[in-house]
Length: 114
Image 1 (cartoon, rainbow, N blue to C red):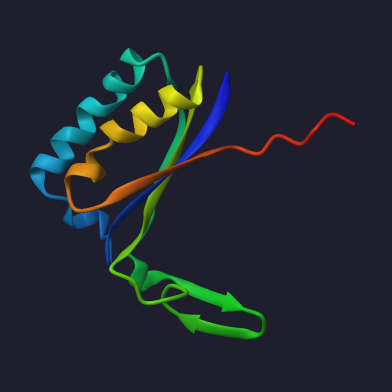
Image 2 (image 1 turned 90 degrees about the vertical axis):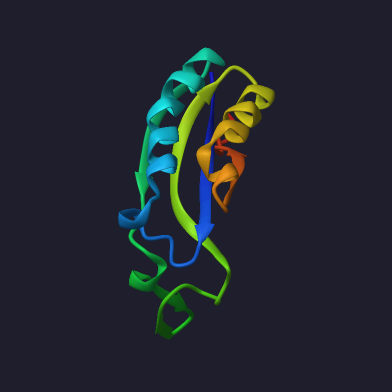
C-alpha cells in the first residue's frame, strides 16, 4: 500500500498541552475510524508549540516559525492507504478539521527504480 503524510495545522501557537477536551476525545476515536476506511497508521508525532521553533534561512537563524501565520504545523502522521481517495477520507475525518485547523495530505516520495 502507498504511504501518505498528513500534516496537521492548528491556530498558532498550537500548544499540545492546551487541547480542548472534546478535541482530545475525538482524537481517541480517530484510529478506529482510520481502520474502518482500510488505512493503517504507521507513525505520528505532535510538535511543541510554534513558539519553541527556530528557523534557518541561509545564514540567518531566528526564533519562531519561518513566517508569522494564523495557523502552524502542529504535528504530522503517516498512514498506509489503498488509494489517494482513502487517504483523503482519512484526512477529512481528522479532528483538526472541525476544531479550528486543517490538514494537508501528500503521498510520500518513492524514488523511481533505476
